Length: 188
Image (tube, rainbow, N blue to C red; front, side):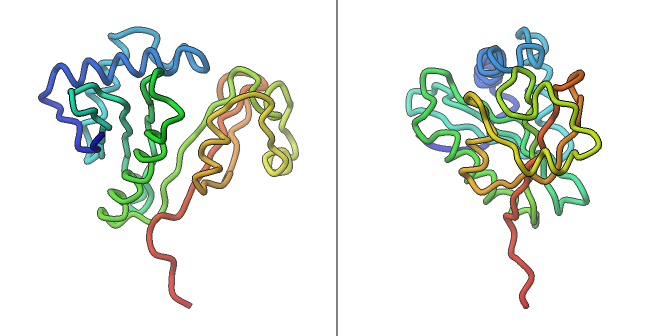
C-alpha cells in the first residue's frame, strides 16, 4: 500500500472514492452520501479551495481508503473531512496511516491544528438522546461510547473533545468536535 495524492483527473479513482463514501457511511450516517451522485459531488468538491486529498492505494490500483483536509483560519487549522476505508480492509491500520499522513501534510502547509466532527446519530455514545443543555461541556467531559463509534478511533490517535453541537442532527443527536495539535507547540 502507498499513500499519495488522489488525482482529480483519474475518473476510475474518483469513482472508487465515491463508492467508498456510499458504502462506508451507510451504517452510521446513511443520509451523508446515500447514492453515487451525491458521493461524486463530494469527491469533486474535495479538489477545490486548496484542500488536501490523499488516498491509500494497493499495488493493483484498488483504492483502500481516502482522506481529505480543508484549510480554515487562514491555514492554521484544518478540518479532517472525510475519512473512509474500504469495508473489507478496515482494522488493518489504513485509517491510522491516512490520518498520520494528513497530519504530516497539514504540518507541511503550516497548519497547527487538525479538527473533525463525529456525529452521533445512532446512539453510539452517551450523548445521544440527552438534552445537553445547560451543561453541554459537562456532558462532553463525561462522554463514553456504548457501541462502536469513530470517537474511540480518533481518541486513540490523540484527538481530544473540544466541543459538542447539541441537536446538530435533530434532538439528542449531537456532533462531537475533536481536535489535535499537529504543528510545533510554542517554545516556553
